[in-house]
Length: 110
Length: 348
Image (cartoon, rainbow over all chains, first blue to last red; front, side):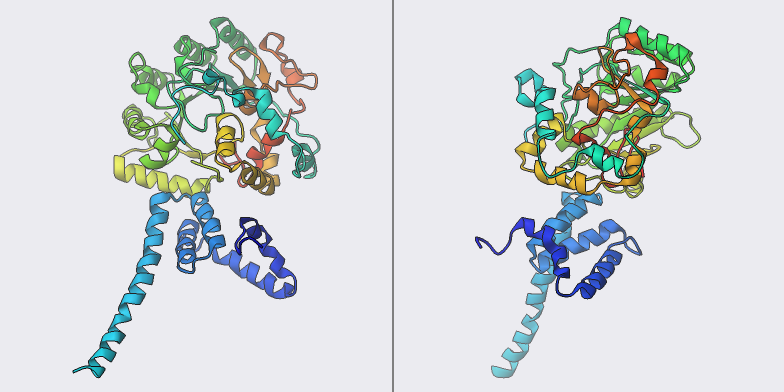
């Protein structure tokens, strides 16, 4: 194996049915329903998925949801802003834990 | 990808040749032939019903050189339909029940007999649609064309690949979006696209890359909201059209390394409902030199009608052209993928 990630492996996702077909069927049905238009539009859901894909750093998901966002009518500006939201939360999540550092620092220092 | 200023043909590029395109599109691979896939839906071979739309390519000359153009049109193209051939079209239309005449190009307005021809078709009481690129309406010598089309109740169908400048200019050249906005304002002022007006302005979206179009209804809402909010503009309908893997778009797919994935996507997205509604079933496409084709894409691939149907306007016979078997190739998957695609947008 030259690399852990191969773009063609994305097409093999459905092979995860092997070994646990009932669980795969439930997952597929639920997954499909999640991305249908509801209170949020399909494009909004694709952009959320794209942002989360970056937060969890999943190359398959980034590939799939960049394509999906474009195919739902988003453009580069919207996709980039979505990624900034994910990045801001990731960065903010680190920074806000600084409060804990400050709590410990207060307790340990004079 | 750099903006072009001339056609592929001007540079003698390999893919300006229809045979070279066909070699790539129809090469041996794992995809089923389009005919097999179509016949599996139980409709028999793909055949036409009555001709409803008479689509005429008035010439390949254009003031623009868009990256995705399936015609390989541009300012350097000299192929223009002559007045004699236009007269042949009129003679046929005068005797036919066909109600809609769809004028395309290049920029159809660049045909020197455009106004005369449109006026003559209107005298026959036929509905005329013009596929205008909008920017031509601002060019010198063409400034009165918008008024002319309004006076003749011509339906205008115009490419606007996005409701913002970024995508539009990438596909159609720098400054195109702003020019398009000015031209749309001119058309709106004439009554085009407005509620309770009989002047129809439809817009066309093509994906700006190697992906399928969004849902037509959803994107139309976005276009209407954003164009009204940002520019005070209105229009009637948005048509989302899939890019066909031919000509300049094929060149883009190959040079960007997207060809294989795009073809796989088209084949895997085959939609039987779209396949039952493809526009070649009720359209006849006429080239600048009078040859007959099942669609505009076949025309650019130089695949004339076949199976006993007359191949040129001079031999036109509506009975022989009705119920004809359609000439297909692997590019046909472009019209049946996802929600389907036609010159009028989605078909399922």
